Structure formats: structure tokens, C-alpha cells
Length: 205
Image (cartoon, rainbow, N blue to C red):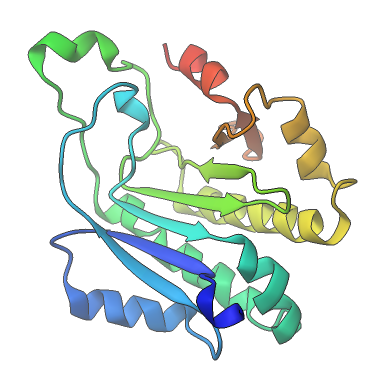
């Protein structure tokens, strides 16, 4: 049943103040919208260190597009976009640096320029996940434009799958069945480009 399905998950560091979180939840909240708050411990990550879970994040899950939006007639769509843009301000307010053990420095990309503070992950109609990253060197208005673009892709995906533009773009990239895809803002065109993990490793090698 709908009440058992999550629509949106908001990710925070474990020590982030609850009163601020509660205020931010109100920016997304609407009747019948299921929002979960998740606090992650601040702990070191291994392996692909420079694409680690960001300190703050938003997951927009399939039930939001399949059930909630259809019930609300897209009335919440504007609220979602505004909430995501406000939430993404943390990427400019909290500029994090990645620390690593001395013996692991070769795993850190010297030219990785994506925010370690904020990301948005979405779930497509056919259950693919896309993690939207945000270039620290770009302006906040460029981030906002990318959020609009990402959500427009998603709306079309749920309305026109499998004949939507996003599906066609991802089909060219997917190499593994459950592979996480990445969205990167092109610094010149300011439009989203999609990468699989291998391509992203190569880009920031």
C-alpha cells in the first residue's frame, strides 16, 4: 500500500541540528507524502574515495513519481523543485575536503571538482539510479538549472518510458544491470551529461 512506500529520503550528517532538519522537511512536506530522515555517521570510506556518499543528499524514489505525483496532479512538482534548490545550498555553505591516509593518496583524484557536500539521487521508471553531482566551480544558478533539467528528464521518463530521452541516453551508458549512473554538469553548456562508473573513473583519473 502507498503508506508503506517512501517517496523521498533526506540525508544528513549525524551531528546536524534536528531543528534545522525539521524546518527543511516542511519545505517538501505535503499530505500523503512519505519522507524519511536518515542520519549518516561521519566515518572514513574506502575504494573509490573521491566518489563517496556526500554529507547531505536527497533520494527521490519511484513511488513519488508513480503514485504521489499522479494523485496530486503534479501540484507538488513546483514544491519539490523549490525544496531541492534550497537543500542544495548546503553545497555552497559547507565546503568539505577529502582526507585520506598517507598510504592511500594514489586513490584520490587531483582534478575531482564535484561537491563532497551535496548530491541528488533519483530512481527511474525501470529502477535505474542516477546520482546527480554538482561542480564546485560552477555558480548556484547553474546547479538550479541542472535540477530543473534533471526533473524534466524524470517527468518525461515516467510519462513516456521506454521512448523517453533519458532512457535512450542511459541505454548507451549502462554496462552492468544494477550500475549506478552519474549526472555531471557540463561547465560550458551547463547541461547534464551522464556517465557510468568506468567513464567517471577515467574522467577524473
